[in-house]
Length: 433
Image (cartoon, rainbow, N blue to C red; front, side, top):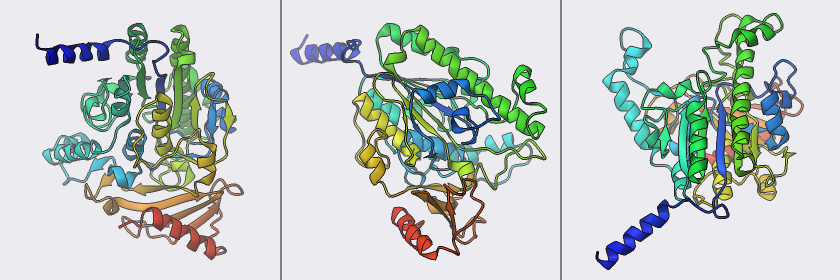
């Protein structure tokens, strides 16, 4: 065998060997709930819903009660988690491409050639950004996708394994949590045996509708919640919480608790309507209010990260650089986030921004075309600025989140200098063109 070929074979063999315990980076479990209000956790003060497993995780975590998603819509929000970039940078500004109307049910439209071509464009755009699973693979990680997934086949996200084969938002992956945990638990067990560090994306469609919780859980909330819609949603939250307990029990059974980082965030908020089993779009999902964009962020690694509560605002884009640094992997220099373990950086950051956009993307590759609102949180102040497009024409709104967490009292007219100052900061982040 020629010497060069011999050296190449030897190098490949070395790469395939499991890392020693001393060299192996931590496993990573990322948990993302789906359509989950920031208020609906025991550790966030709720008396209406039971979340004992999330409460336990929070007690063991570095907790950011004032965490923010980049968008209050599923696909853009999830894309930010995997790219570490804000929505106008990764370009996935909505859930679906805009296509001509097709007669029949929504499924007919989603099978049309125009729709499928649009989705292919979105996937190609998404792949232009750095992706968390791919960067972790350079450090020797294997990875698994389960649950919500919008970017076609799981391989487009850089995962080495996955459940989703290309359906609109998850296809077979949506069985995770609701029907089974086996793909996730088997992945964990197998890679423990093989000595490989792993990254798992656990994003069940929970508590997302359809709100079909087990009757044993619904019975706890029926009659106590203000409406049957709210009862079903709260029961779904508890069902999701139970699955977290099951996954963490599996980690404990495999002896991996001390070797695994667990990160939690929700993709966007949800406030049930009182009259029908839908969401209050004006104040939660698809809105710029905290009911749509705020989510607690938890980062846990027993023995390595001290449990504490951090009052500084944090962003979903911070998760990627935090995990890459903990894994000893390359952190992209042009990312939008900061390390959530860096207290000085958190204190020095002047604001956390985000945006809201149309459900269907007006023009792929032109983020401003789908824009509805831009917003930022600076200290305890929150500014919301309308785009003037897509039905968003309201004047700027300003809220004091500490005094008014429900964003009821608009202070814009009383504090014009704050509006001017914060608008300049928002324009410096992205001018919306």
